[in-house]
Amino acid sequence: MSLSTTKAHLQAIHLHDMPPRYVGRLAAHEAMLLEIEGFPAPLLTPVRISCSDGSSVPGEIVGFRGHRSLALPLRGNIPLAVGAPIVADGQAGLARCGEVLLGRVIDAMGRPLDRLALPQLPDTWPLAGGNSNPLSRGRVMRHFDCGVRAINALLSLGEGQRVALIAGSGVGKSVLMGQMLAGADCDVVVAGLIGERAREVSDFVEARLNNGMRRRTVVVATTADEAPLLRIKAAMRATAIAEYFRARGKRVLLLLDSLTRIAHAQREIGLALGEPPAMKGYPPSALGLIPQLVERAGNDRRSGGSITAIYTVLADGGDLEDPVVDAARAIVDGHIILSRSLAEAGVYPAIDIGRSLSRTMADIVDAEHRSAAQRFRQLWSVYEENRDLILMGAYTPGSDPLLDEAVARQSEMRSFITQREDALVPYSESRTALIEGFGT
Image (cartoon, rainbow, N blue to C red; front, top):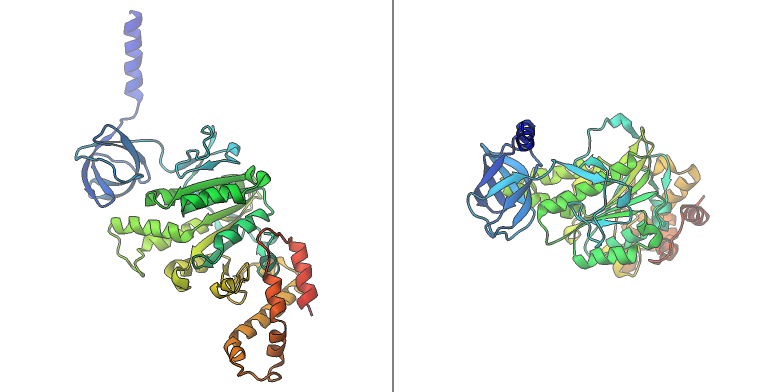
């Protein structure tokens, strides 16, 4: 047998052993959805869509309609024609991970945004996370130092806690998140900037990440003008990277800004797929995505690692009963609400102490700290309840000793929660200041 005949024979055997490669055909295009014939691929399969100008764009299988597969392109305004070929383009639902991601800025698909070479990543992690036994999650027992006095003292956070940072637009969510990032006591930071303005992504990387912080931070960013599927994949990729480092015993801080934009992206997809708008225009899948993301954070008993997660939530028009706000508040271990009236009065951070809550604080602080925090919150709440009467002059001093003390110490309490944006106050100092000022 000649050499050429042998090569042809081996190639034929190799091709015979390969699995079949399905090529689908574009049958319909409605709104954002592409209907594909002859393409039996599972959900979340990445695809490559051929355009009429010779180029191609990526997409992903998101559902089925009869015998047709439904796909969403990851780019808009693409020249498509009926019958365009569509092929599978990679494994479904895996994120490439590795230590070399530290210090990098990537997009929702894992491609670099920092103009550096594509990192060689040896490991993979499921984008949607793995099935976890609830009993493998450890309790929140150790405090988490975030460098913000009002939070450390009055809303003490624990390692492995999930927290919602809730506020309207322009009240200081992003600034407070950056301050907590600067003061965080952790090994790795994963920041997911979802649906942000491009300018804010640059500001976060250049202004919020100093040299030391940048070396232990992974940033996953997608801007507001990108496809809704990309915004969801960015959130899933950021969470998957955090899970990867937690599995290696690291203490991880996960920042996702914001859950609201993630829910908006899923709303666009759900409505395109024909889901009914169940609650204020949100289909069930939009609100169901929130616990799927949030429940992936926490402590891991097996590795000893942890994910402390902070999720920003936009309260549209200050509405704290918004479905996204309500769904987030119900699943997290605490919430920090920012007040527009405090922000307008020049108080920063503008934390509404009375309406904010840490559900794990009782397990991580001592009795003396807990008593002082309760006293502060009591004085703060009684003043806010009677604020209108006091401002109108309708309250007579001496009628209520507790309210008298609250009025006398109002400026002291505001001074306690006020902190410069560039200042960091460690947990021990915050605790001492609270006990000295409001302890019994």
